[in-house]
Length: 273
Image (cartoon, rainbow, N blue to C red; front, side, top):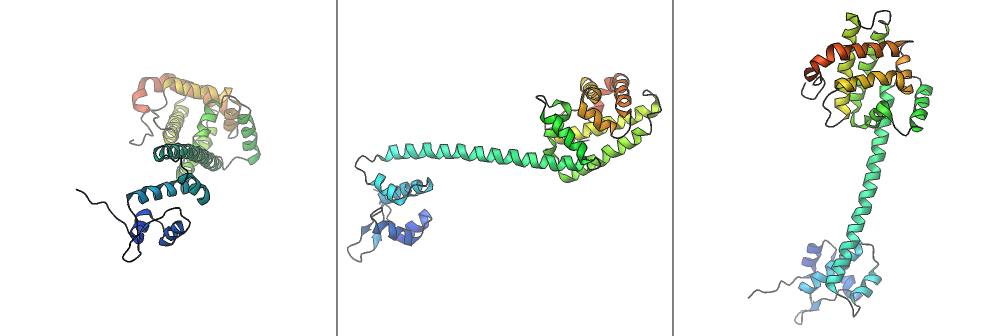
């Protein structure tokens, strides 16, 4: 035969994580009346008191006033199991609301971090140009290749954003010197190989599950340079005619280099290579 556990006021205080003074207050207002020992008048709490205190603490967590809790617990129609059921539903609703707030915070954080990284990446471009591009992107239903990349910039650390800025600036400055050469010349194609490496590394950094730029994907990037207004202006910022020249060079690269070396080239810039 098991003996029921009996708690002193200090023991119950430690068990419930509330102060002795609070338990005394609950006793005084008739919310949680302990048993008084005949020999010394000390308070004793039994199992039913622990269950009742749990109810009080749950309702308090749900922001019920002490007066309302007392009204619920002392009502003749009070049903403990139904009370647990109701509390569970209220807590689940609170979890749902909390998750919505967390999701909102995370979305805002991602947006802020993405803009900070974008400012790092475009640090050498005049502010008015960036604001113009922002306006164009906001008016679009489909963000396009460029817009999609901007949305995931939050996945980069500050140091990674600075690294990619340096790589992009270096490439465009070097490429702008080659516009007098044919797009299929060896020198230009070597530089396009650098472009592919830079793009592949960048996309591995911002996209989880990315597996490298494929043949069709690189052709889409080539097309976007001319077809996407924002992308076109970004490239033309570094040199008049650069967008059209790079478009042609990328198409040649895709047909004569990428297509036949796809498996190897797609790995460039991955975390393991």
